[in-house]
Length: 380
Image 1 (tube, rainbow, N blue to C red):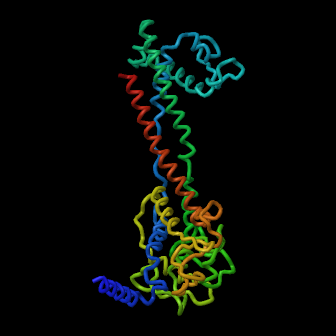
Image 2: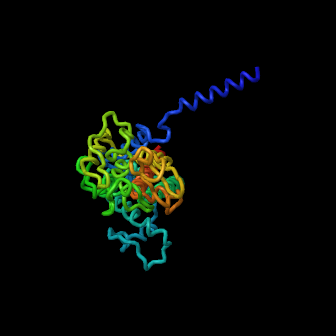
Image 3: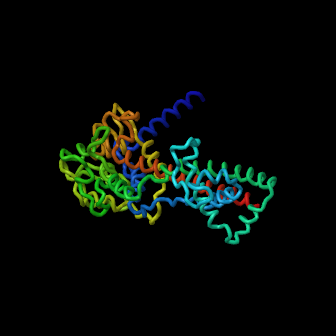
């Protein structure tokens, strides 16, 4: 029984060897389809509206209303600090630096002056809240003053937090978003998937074949765009390459002529295989997710990093070599990693700024809600 089991195992092993694909050492069709689909999601950024996510406005009027009420409870000594002449309407509109006032007053001065002017304007206007506050007896007035002081402290803290968000809310600049994205995709802020040129996509004059165009160093100087990366992963050099390496339903009609630069028609035909995306806003988190997947796809072998399918020697599109971009010196570490690929660095910076903006916008919206709640609580 034992002997027969051994024979069965040996027969099975022979069958498995015989059944192994004869092209196991070569690049197969659709080998780069997953990476191509990720790169296409980047190309689709050019189909987006390139509008930044909206930023909610924080309603500062709610705090102004409380400041005006707070001023109705102020005594004459306090009000005299802001007036140039006792009982007059001529105010110190800017913080008087020559006075020995606490330095933290400087940031609050304009709000106090605005509240005092508003109070002067509202007196006699029939505002029932202001009239009621003005008629409070001393004990109730002190209670109201304490309550308002607590509310103002809360509101001041919220407004300070909002100010800290302003930098993140200002980035990226709307005027720079589209040019930065298009340059990362096509190498030129005026080009599209329909008219990109070789000199846009590949930033070097020495790029004269698939093997030379698709071998770069980090930081990159040749295959600096998403378009160039797609060409290196999907184009077939005449007579040697793989048909349909990127999983195309129909084979491209334009090939990469051997020992020549890529043609514009070859580039635009490959980009045409990327489906159009609906007009949507650019999402920082979605962009970050795609970039993270592409970063994870880079394989490091013998001191170089590869995006795309690599077997041996170089990325010359031959079935036994590679349809890929080779990054010599790639280690994955800072200075020699994914963000040292030109297009990846630009898009990663955009993603980081968009994520910061999205988070800041959510925080600003929360602050606005808290401001309103704080004000409504004081009116209750």
